[in-house]
Image (cartoon, rainbow, N blue to C red; front, side, top):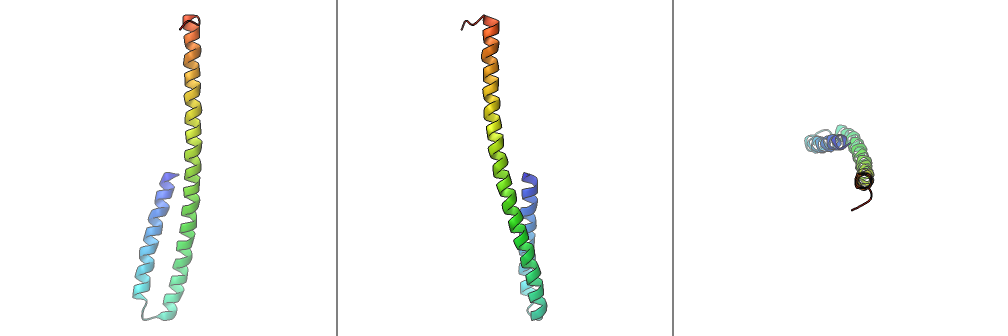
Length: 92
């Protein structure tokens, strides 16, 4: 998921650079520049929206992973206590 987020960030940055280049080079042909900028704007908006979705998914996954690690740690601790009880006959 993080890899996909990074890839989308790279695409967004490239699209922004390309968009800026097209705007600056399209001074001569106003209609052509407007068509290109509209297409580029839609592409950039799409990338921004996908980036937001990936960020939210990443946050959700981090939350799930944290909960999993907490539960795992508790289970490991409980197993250690139970093992101690079995090995030492309940004496600490």
